[in-house]
Image (cartoon, one colour):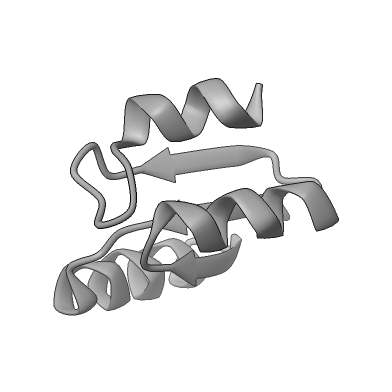
Length: 69
């Protein structure tokens, strides 16, 4: 299984744990900690899945998804 996942999570401990699990399951995971970074990265790369925290420092996850769409 080789999917690319963008994981947006501002809780560092939780983000690292989720990233670890997903990578052990065969996925390529890019972890970022705020919406601005995620938005910039999503414009540069294609991802198969976005895992988005709803409460982010710059703006919420719902707004992030709207901006990416």
